[in-house]
Length: 82
Image 1 (tube, rainbow, N blue to C red):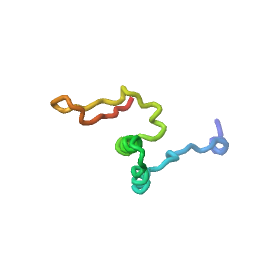
Image 2 (cartoon, rainbow, N blue to C red):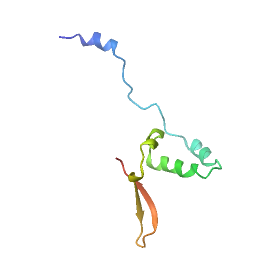
Image 3 (cartoon, rainbow, N blue to C red):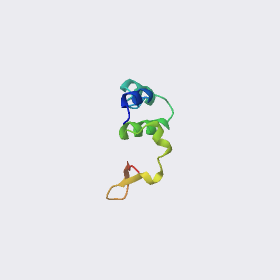
Image 4 (cartoon, rainbow, N blue to C red):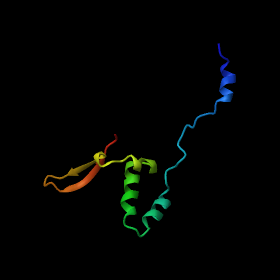
């Protein structure tokens, strides 16, 4: 059979975790203090749903489900996975 100890030495070890981290509260506050109005919804969406930066290119309108009250008024939206 094969000598797995010798084979493992030549194979690079895989990464066990992502190379990013959760932003600190101070970093989030600093982002939200920026005066551009377009940034707040993006930051709030990323924080509340837990999506990463790379997920934005795969997000489509079909993944957003509007939630309405009894009168038909839009009150929230839900992001569903594909």
